[in-house]
Figure 1 (cartoon, rainbow, N blue to C red):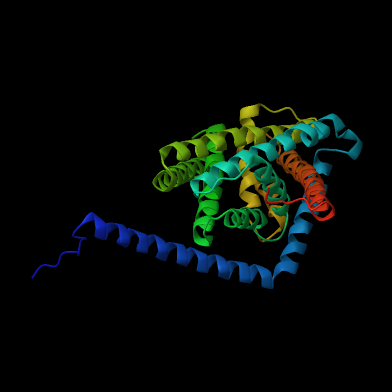
Figure 2 (figure 1 turned 30 degrees about the horizontal axis):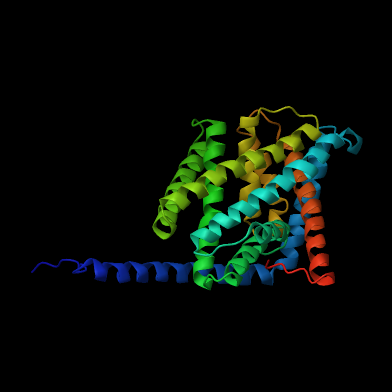
Amino acid sequence: MSFEPALPSSPKEAKPQADRTTAIAAARLSALAAKLRATIKAFRIPLFIAAALLFTVGLAISAARLDLALSDIAPRYILLSALIFIPLAFVYGAFNFMVMARGAGVKVPFARAFKVSCVAQFAEFLPIPGGAIVRGGALMQDGSGAVEATKHVMVNAVLWIACAGAAAAFSLGWEDPISIAIGLTGIAGITACTIWLSAKAGIGLALLALAMRVVGLFIAGARILAGFLAIGVSIEFLDLYPFVFATILGSTASIAPGGLGISEAVAAAIATLSTVAPGAAFVAVALNRLIGFAVSGIATGVITVLSSAKGFDTNG
């Protein structure tokens, strides 16, 4: 007797089966994420203290090895990042959110998308996946279902990390096993996310989402470049992307606010694969974090004050 797998008898049966498979996978991911959040919440204070110590001690050791004093930091590059690059990142984030919202079947005006972008970037510094919560909540307020909003936020986040990983591999070269692993994982992630977005929103929006990540990587690279230049370290623009990858990867680690200390440690570790001193990488990424925290905090504060004092509707 032979046994053959039961196959759908028609395309109409295949689609519900595929939908059930997707729903089961999404449910499992949600359950895993819920368990992870519960574990993180239970140990939130010790994890935060550990991350803060890692950041502080790592910054002190890195500065000492570079013989870097506070007076050695060039303020013009700090201002360049604070006044030009980070506001550009807000604008980019707004357009990126608009594209993501279109993929989820809702339209968001630029003004609202810009507010969401500012608040989401500041929320990244919270010891939770704050940016994802802000963006997902905004999508639901604009009419997207909870499950659909969660899927789009997750897929777009994975696409962002995957693009940064691929860029890092091309920057490092395809010779070291670690670089190869990062690059192949990034390419696989880009492929999977693009296919998913194409199925959900069409190939046009999927390619637009991918193009937006290229723009975002350029802006993220400019921010890290300002960090290096501020401490007097010259670096080629294409050599920045391992540290951009470290920053993006660390920010997804919700065990610490915005990956506090984690992004910097990953940057220092990945610097061993390049010609950049690990201490310089740690300090440059740390400076980028501090500037971003200050600027996004001010922007979020202004939005909050306007919203409460003048009846400023953050949905509009």
